[in-house]
Each structure stands twice: as C-alpha cells, then as structure tokens.
Image (cartoon, rainbow, N blue to C red; front, side, top):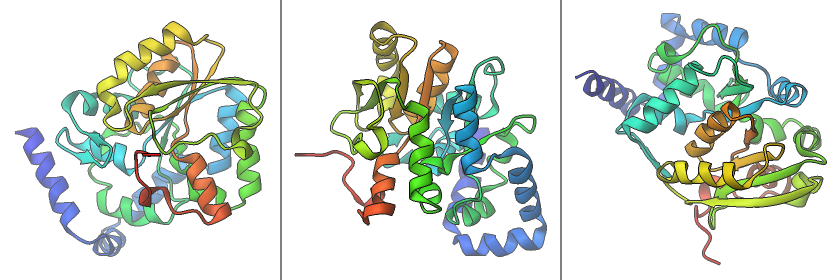
Length: 273
C-alpha cells in the first residue's frame, strides 16, 4: 500500500507542468526550504571536484533519473528499468547508511543548472524525506554543461587533475556512447576497460563488480560511465578500498559545449558502427 501511494503521488506530480510548481513553491514557502538545503548541504561545482581531488573521494552521482528510480520500484528511465532491489540500494546510498566511514561523496543536482530549478520545485517533497540532513553532498552537474559552460578549459583541467598520471580502468557499457577523448583523458598513465551491458546494467552489476575486484589492482582509479549502475558501483567500490568516480556523460557533454556536438540525450544509446 505504501508503494502504491508513493507511485500515485509521483504520477500526480509528473502529470502537472513544471512551471506550475515553480510558482507554487514560491507561494507556499517550499522554495526557501530548497534554497536553504542547497546552500547548507550541496557543494559548488569546483568545490566538489577539489574535495574529490584533495581527499581522493569516490563519487556517486544522482541525476533526475537516479532520483526517479529512488522514488519508485516501478519507475523506468530510457536505459534502466526500476526494481525494489535497485530502489533500496539507491536509497541507502542517498542517505549514506553504512557509508559513514568510507571515502564516498554522494552528489545531488544542485542549482548550478537551470533545469533543476523547475525539477526541485516540482519534486522536492518526494525525495526530501530520503535525504540526510547531517551529510554534505556534491553537485551532480560536475560532468555536465553546467560546469563546462562556465569555462570549458578550467573545467577540463579540473577533471584532468584527478587522473593525471594515474592508472585507470574505464567501466562502460559495450558499444555505449562513452569515448575517452584525448583532451580529457590524455594524461592517464595507462588504461584498461571492463565492459558491462549498455542498458539495464544493474542486472549485470554483481558480475561487473566481481570482474573489477578479480582483475583490477586496488591502486587503479576506476572511471564509471554506466548510468545508475555507476552510482551504485562507485559506492560499492569505495567500501572495498577503490577510488571510483561516476563520470557520466562527461566526454559527450564536453564536446557539446566546445564543439557544438549534439546533446548526449539526442544520440543513440548503443553505437552500431
């Protein structure tokens, strides 16, 4: 019954245009609550990357898709179907339960991207009870246009500083959109790749984790581009002593800002060439 009620609450909000909630949130005072949470609990874009670099923190990112999967076991996004198991694990990471003594920085969408102004105005009451008010979060948009749009070169160098001279392992979907372009990744010492499924990678997550732990040394930096499965793998790997970064669509986004390439959401999820 609880799941059904939550699904109905989510469905009602999804049916109403965002602009309506933007107005409502300012009238009912919830926008002040959103702004206060972001100010007190979410780091800035460069502050997020600097803390990751300085403290060698693993990075688990929640975008709107991961938050949707957190809200309902019946939710689906374009490249991942929801499930009770997926929902439960995402909720645990979001709250930080069991990660208190790990080097993990969980990220939420901050207000650095204009898209999330209307997003939070619309959905804030649903994820709010699942957030940890004693925790500091990073900003999810560190790998999106919000960062590179400010200063592409500064953003590029901030990311390269994390893996410059490091042995890295890319964990990606086979034939996925990810490409380790030289401008971003040219400074790595060495690289290897572990492949998972290009969609619904959560179904393959135990096998993927086993392959990483059996074949990749602990001192190797793990770079994850695997949708919601990357969020979870970053958290799991941090518990095992790995340094793991959920980098999302970083290369595609950089090329969109710098070269005018199509936004990643408009390109095929699986390459056929």
